[in-house]
Structures are given as structure tokens and as C-alpha cells.
Image (cartoon, rainbow, N blue to C red):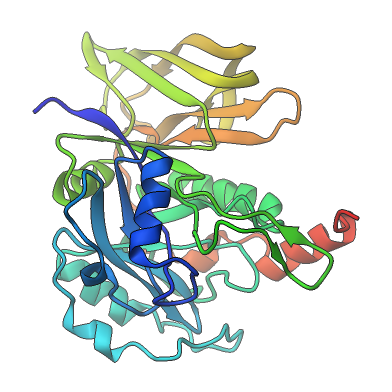
Length: 362
């Protein structure tokens, strides 16, 4: 089967943890959003057996492992509940700034060795940011860079996570970036602090995955290969050529002395700006109404390690509305690097700044 772009969501909850919808009601929401797949990730709970799988939607079995040092999703190719799920604490623990370093290591290693995939969630979002600074980046398969746009503090936490992931990439990490709606309820919620939080939409943000089949194994294999992009709406196309060979999102072109020819386009939205980002620096950009396209040529040195990706911004506000996983050249090697090496501000620092600069709408 030829690979096709599938629309999905990698983070969602039902009433089996702290969501409000039954599995049947959640399926209706996902179908209304015209998704091809979603992952169900209730807190410390394996909810997959509660779903009717007689649906055109592909359901990826999963769980949000919720610990005092942070939250991470685990995804499975099949629906069999791992034995360690029953070892997770119930009720799930609250954030603990004094959590012992290294708490995540044994469980992440166990999960990765078993063939499951793991993804650190909302790493910069206080009070649920990632607290285990000793986490080895090589143990992080995926990272949820864009989380729940309805939550006000994600206005700063999501861009901070995107910037941190860029620093990971510069250091040699090849962790795949994902998006997740963190769906809990479709209704607006009064937080009690002056903020009325909009209801969630399944698939906002949406993660597009270039998979050779609409089934969990094919989707996760595509994510392993970084053939994915995250969007708040606009769609992205990327085409590249180096030494007469074509490449696309997530590909590794290896060590070459050559000129990379990159073409990209974005559609959907009002006025959009498309950017070519190399090693964290914008090297080319273009903008247009309803979409934009760009052609860019960039020399690559065989002795250099690096990456290039496409970022898309709303050209009026300057806010990021979509981004791709990178194209890599050279060889990544982050084996000795830890999460704490790349955190410039804590989630608390970010949210404190946000609180000082923004006041709840009246």
C-alpha cells in the first residue's frame, strides 16, 4: 500500500480517568472531526477494551503514565494490557517538585525494551511539567511539543517546548515531535480563577502521519521514522532533492557534500508565513494570503550534523500554527545528554511570567 497522510490525535481522556465522555461519546467526537485515528490515554488506566473497535477509526491503545515527576504517554501496536499497568499508582500522584531524580529511568527503559513507544507530555506546562532532569534523551522516543491550545498557559508553554525540542535536535536528539489535544471535555469550563477555558476539540492540534496503512503498527512505524507534522489547521507539503534523490519530512539524507533543494507549501488559514528552519535558525521565509510556498537551496557539508524543518506562523500574530519534524543530515548522538541540560526556564517560571503579563478576560 502506498503511504498516505492520516489525521490523528495522540492524547485523549474519557470518564475512565478525568474526562467526561464515555468511549462511545468520544468516538462520535473523533468521527465528527474526521480523524483517521486517535490514541486513548487515560491516566494510569488501560481504557482500550472499553472501546467498540468496529469503526473506521483506528484506535491506538495507550495510557498516560502519571507520576510525581511528570506525565508520559505509552502507545501499543496491539490492545493487550501490559503487566506493569497494574503497578501504577491509583489515584495517580500529584506533582512533586522534590521527586527523586532518576524516577523515570527504569520505567522508560522497561517500556522501550518491550516494544512499546513512549512520549513525554506537555514538558513545560506548570504544574504538570517534566521534573526528572536526569531523564536520558535516548530514552525519549517521542515528545508532545504542542498540547491543548484551550489551556491559557499553553500560550507560553507550547512555544517553550518547541524551542527546547529545537535545542535537543541541535544536540543530536532525533525524538519525534507530536501534538495532543489532551481532550477532557467538549464544554467550556470555569477554572475558578477568572479564566473560562474553551471546550476541547479532538484533533486540535492535529498530527498528520505519513503511514503505509491505517492501523496502529503502521502509524507508529511512521512516527518512529518521524514522518509527521503538527498543525492547528494548515496543511503542509514538503519535497526535497539531494544528489538526484528525493526526500521528505523525517528522512535522514546522511553525510553528503551537496546542495539540498527544498520545496514546501502551506494551505489553509488567513495570512500565513512559511519558514525554513536550519539548526534552530530561520534561513528563508515567504508569506501569502490563504497559504504560501517556498523554494530554497542550502549547501550541506559531509562533516556537519544538522537538521532542517518547516515552521508555519500566522503572519499577523506571529504565532506558530504548524511545524514539521525535521529532515536530518549527518548523524545524531545524544546518548549522554539529559533532559535537565536543556531546560532554560521551569514551567513555574513560564507561567509566572504569563500571569504577570496576561490577565483573564473579563
